[in-house]
Image 1 (tube, rainbow, N blue to C red):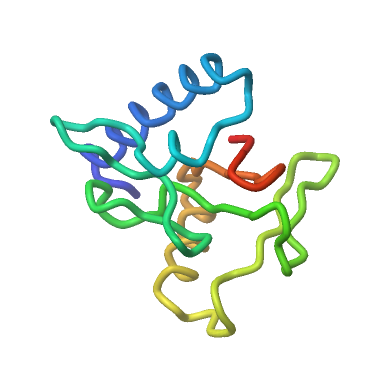
Image 2 (spheres, rainbow, N blue to C red):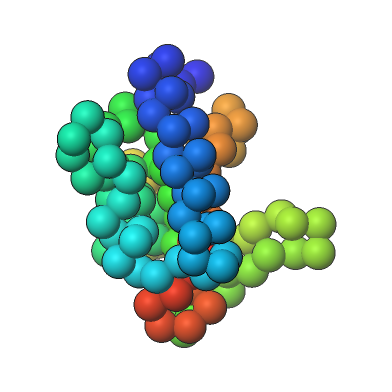
Length: 123
């Protein structure tokens, strides 16, 4: 289970994202996601260079997974809204992959940034 501080920050991030989605007519520019949420006066990015991302202010579980518009992977969203996501690299025991699997098992909410065109994402 997630610690209460991280869970509270995660909730604030989701609320912030809802506002940004409204402000940007659903499609978020990369710079909004990369600059991110402000927590205690500091910017908290919501996306990193790899697809699975955990900002420093969150204790253990990632906050987001990202698919680029020209992804070489078979990431997809099924009709029932289930996401099939390729783990990072080829090692299923790599720490980011393990944390992503544990987040799923523990029902920890994540942001899925789906790249629609270069520099633009649906959250």
